[in-house]
Length: 396
Ligand SMILES: Cc1cc2nc3c(=O)[nH]c(=O)nc-3n(C[C@H](O)[C@H](O)[C@H](O)COP(=O)(O)OP(=O)(O)OC[C@H]3O[C@@H](n4cnc5c(N)ncnc54)[C@H](O)[C@@H]3O)c2cc1C
Image (tube, rainbow, N blue to C red):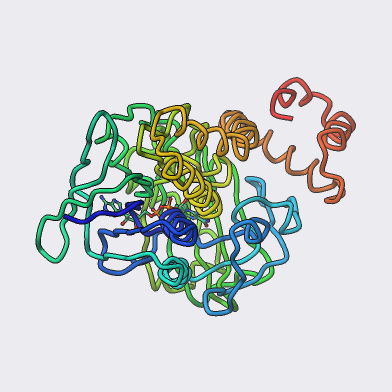
């Protein structure tokens, strides 16, 4: 039997952050990861904004940066016009395009340097509960079952998270329209622009979008996310991507060097993602931005918050639901407002025809980027397409 103050399940960005800040706070910390290689296989577009890094205490490192972009271009369905946004205005996925496997490994290395123990190839298979609270996990480690007891467990086990459900959390289950199915190719010899991350909206990617995230010259992640209610199956999602590539000579001549699939949650922030002794972070807590699908930054920040509450709970010997709810409040104060706004926008965008979407992009492409306020957009729509005012009212 192993005894720790904090057990972190999962070594993605959320887990590595929780482990780093728990260990740095002087807590005896273990992070376990079921895969044999942290950060691999990659399932990510690898777009990452810069704004959160100060709070996350991360310095950009050329080791994991593949490209630095000026901003984002958001194309309407006809691709005649694009909204051009500076990186700092363009959300969670715009700033750097990273090498995700290297990034995740460096985040785990920070946790190790802070003093956390790390077990790889060690899945949590069961929750240990004691006196009505989560008190550890049964883990397969080096071919043996180990009971790891911990005062606090932080579950950072990602989109397919099971730990919270095993512990009894029903509220993290997703509605079908809040799940996006993704397919992505890393492509070589393509005409991507290394200065921009590109997004394509409309029926090319129903209720989602298609992306081109450059990885330096002539290489890019070309991917698509489609809501599962709009796709027959995952081959359907791949067909959407293949069709777009086929119709774009700058990409159809490219060669695929990696093929990625995965799921993303695009829900509102859930009401409950804690239980006595248990905090969920990152994708496990459904903290992905519903409009961009970017979740690395939110995972990392939520891991830091979880560590601070774990520290307080252990110091006060208080593992009650009330204490855990403090973490929920911190996360909601940080993310909920923007999340809800983006979730509503996502729902609305899914209902717009290609024609309306083109008009919206047309209008917004002409609004000065510095000025991309609701007021400025409203005035531009009113002037150019007054017939759209009613339809776009709630979106805007
Ligand atoms: C196709 C695709 C493209 C994306 N593109 C972007 C993007 O461009 N930018 C962006 O910001 N976000 C993107 N995301 C989302 C981003 O990848 C996630 O939000 C981010 O990885 C969440 O970090 P996390 O630490 O919460 O979870 P994860 O990174 O998923 O880490 C969870 C870890 O837990 C481990 N684990 C699971 N169960 C157990 C268990 N029982 N025991 C031990 N370990 C376990 C897993 O192996 C995994 O390593 C994308 C996602 C997909 C699928």
